[in-house]
Image 1: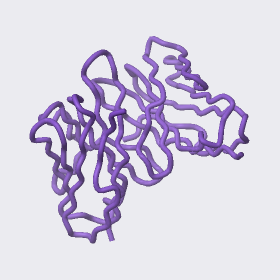
Image 2 (image 1 turned 90 degrees about the vertical axis):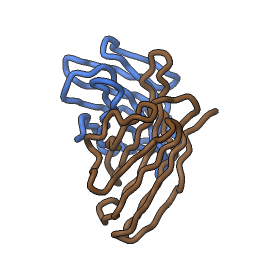
Image 3 (image 1 turned 135 degrees about the vertical axis):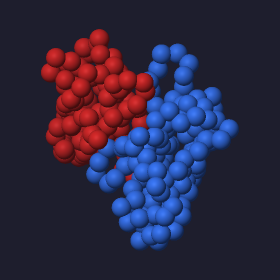
Image 4 (image 1 turned 180 degrees about the vertical axis):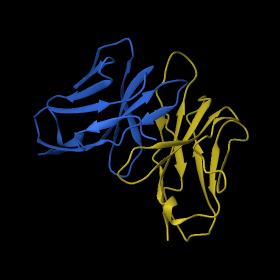
Length: 110
Length: 115
């Protein structure tokens, strides 16, 4: 079963613009993670934010977490064509089991 | 940089045939996961191993799927018999138990097509 729901399902922007993707989940979590998947490939871990954290940065990535609203957002600044991929949020509620959302397909046009 | 290895990358089979996938996790990673990803959806966990023991196989269709990790290193996922609905990407991931990390490292996946 899918825990997270990403919004939007698809996003198309121009190179240099910022991209924002949102994720909502249903139950309390230990942490939330974002992964990227290039077409037909495996997933690459981007960033992890714990339930007691509100914001994290990694390079051009900024993740926020609002546990009261059970939501998270991923911001990619100054996007590049190479950022074109599917982005998934995944939650950990207990142990290490990841429960993924259905993803946002990001297209960055050169 | 160490990576999770999977083979084959692509597999085409006919329904009712048996198929097997192999995964070699990053060296030293005690936890290994198999996920199934249907096109257009997020991955769903099939089975989780801690060393050679199954920790979670609640989502594994046990009438046709089996998984093993006999020596606690590499792992095999088998489907017998394959059905049309099994067409998907099968992803393997591993995680280190050292330190406070929940990051999982994924292999490139095996794309299965059942005809």
